[in-house]
Image 1 (tube, helix red, strand yellow):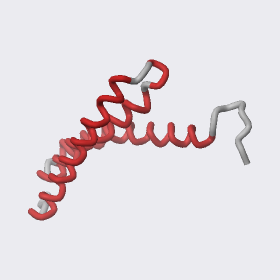
Image 2 (cartoon, rainbow, N blue to C red):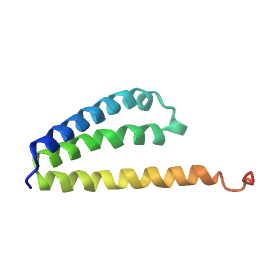
Image 3 (cartoon, rainbow, N blue to C red):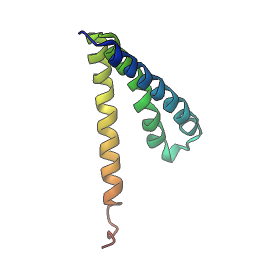
Image 4 (tube, rainbow, N blue to C red):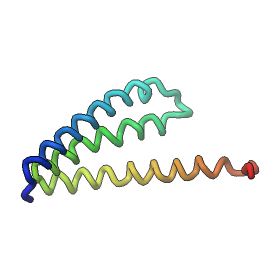
Length: 97
């Protein structure tokens, strides 16, 4: 892949921002209690896996990009499932109108 240098610098800046978000999300994930562990770890895993994906795209490494996307796909899917379930409410309780 041929990535223009301006796009490469933008992708490197995006990877740096994702790294900062991952570091910020690590502390709440480590402090989470057993009943509420999934959401903080998903909030950490999304940017943590996004850093190598963005770097692979910036440097044009297609095998690393596809591997990272294979790992990132289930994380994003699970976040979508959990957010959809949270919006619907818990089963057995009436939803407010």
